[in-house]
Image (cartoon, rainbow, N blue to C red; front, top):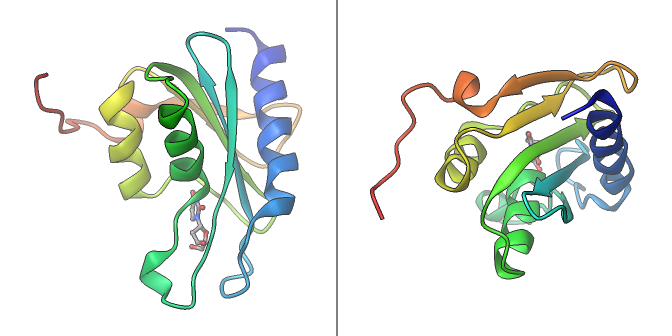
Length: 130
Ligand code: THU
């Protein structure tokens, strides 16, 4: 995958974040998830008055994607202009279920995003045989 595609995903995640519903944390996150078939699904965090009900941007994108028939993913970009936004532990596990080999793109520099493998973020991840 080339730098241009990384930057495109990063930009899509950043743009998506304007729709984040974050009236409690004021931490607005956007995600852009690239499926192996080329489709890109965006997501935002959606908070709730009952705080624990909140869903992160990454899981919003993943649930949208799986519900549209995508099950294999190449990369996800996660961006917030309110601070560092590497995926939380719950999101790492949920992404790992579908594509342990995927890349995670984040950081603060739109022109030079940071890129790591999901396996780096979640070593010895758990996954049942299917
Ligand atoms: N959040 C995400 O959506 N993704 C991340 O990678 C980190 C955290 C959200 C959850 C909550 O709405 C807010 O950011 C503060 O934790």
